[in-house]
Image 1 (cartoon, rainbow, N blue to C red):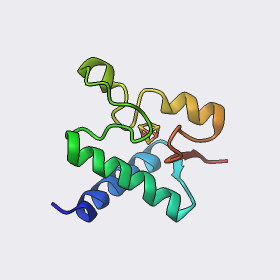
Image 2: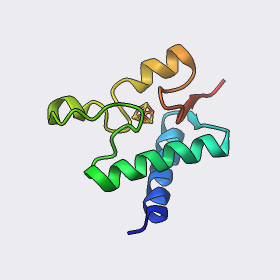
Image 3: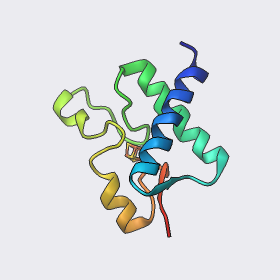
Length: 92
Ligand code: SF4
């Protein structure tokens, strides 16, 4: 699979997840593309789509928390209006 194909899969996941949870994706197309590409690269390298903005420790239990959607995003969106990577945004 090419990187572009993986990116499409990640984008598809992100769109569905955002719609189901009443979030929106980053409205800046370039910024959105950067996060999607980061996730796609992690997916290609590791299998799970680890958060591109966090460190993969190699400890599976620990790293489970940062598979997108990570355990932190809901609180981050609530507090800052967006997740740490600026993928998911709160709808106002
Ligand atoms: S910070 Fe955002 S992009 Fe990163 S894993 Fe969490 S939800 Fe996904």
